[in-house]
Length: 227
Image 1 (cartoon, one colour):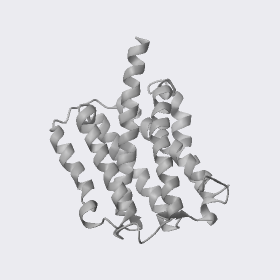
Image 2: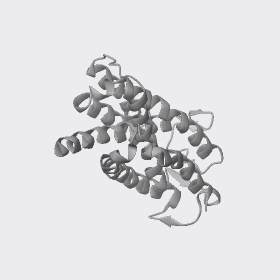
Image 3: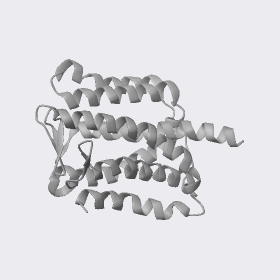
Image 4: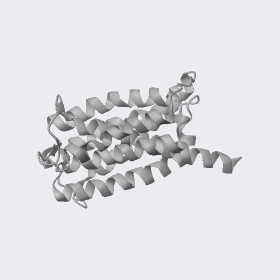
């Protein structure tokens, strides 16, 4: 098994084992979780396949292995299962153990922050990953602003987003330092935090936020149906 496989296993193992904790009861949230994974991971995998084939990034066979599906290593497919599972698990733990506080801020602030994602369209139009990443970030913030503003005002959501960035920094640092994944200089602007391209911070935020967005959406309709 490749290093990438084992890293995915580390990410998901703890949350899976603790899913049956009585207070959190995460296993009861699996239906909306898996629907969120289906929608978001499915979309990101299509993006992944396309940009891998056009050369935005590439995977090291030394660390990601040689077994591939649609030119993506098995570890990459597992990434889009382990990450959302761990992310939503973190949210449910925060929800179970902490009191909720409402952080009041305008939906227009969220949209304005999202406009940062459009900057590459002006200054870095020739950087493919930077541009796509920025557009996805803008769309994510717009969706939150229009449809899920109240949920993202919750201290539960903000705390879960913050806590999710801790494993992101650790594992993405490993991915890019070894590297398990390497980026074409033609696709990114080249600014990095240690070894992590700045684009990955926006990518990670959009990915985590969209998992939460659709999880909230499907959980809401699941609750109504059961009621």
